[in-house]
Image (cartoon, rainbow, N blue to C red; front, side, top):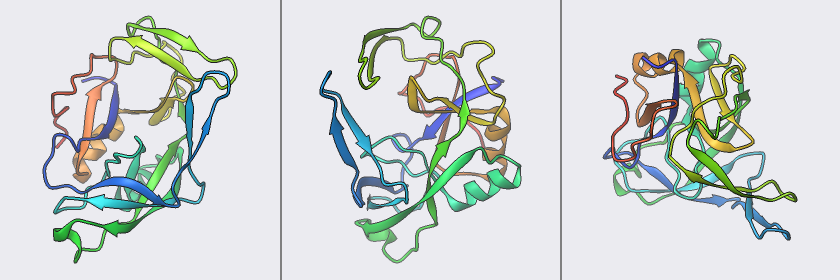
Length: 209
């Protein structure tokens, strides 16, 4: 089994789970770089509200169609911390509009958006990626190449949850410890793939429970 995994929600390959259609309360703000025209999204640090679409069950990882945020249920956060995995910050995510007819009478779990402190560096060459452009003013980069993420040897800081905050801040990675915990605790709607392997978006990801 791989030592490291890329993970996120599996909303496109699972049925019945609610997902966040939009971020509404407060909505994110946007700025445009004068040099390259890149649009940057900014969220309020105290959390936000989401509009829910579809679904008959509340998942432990909530997919977000507005922006690829990592939103976890309180029971996932609690089980991570119980295992001593706490290298992240949380802000509350509230369900402010629920358009799922089947979930209107079912209270949602506590949800939190997760900001991971752990760090690594993605090896662009080993991943088959190359930088098309890089803005000197805002740092925005465009890439081309294969859809995979291989790590620079020695760049992992030893934490269980980590990411390359400079190149791929919205892509999250974890250790085998987290992968096994997801199965033991039966976290729902997660998707795991081996880090460094070509990503197959048509698959349902690895079976973890």
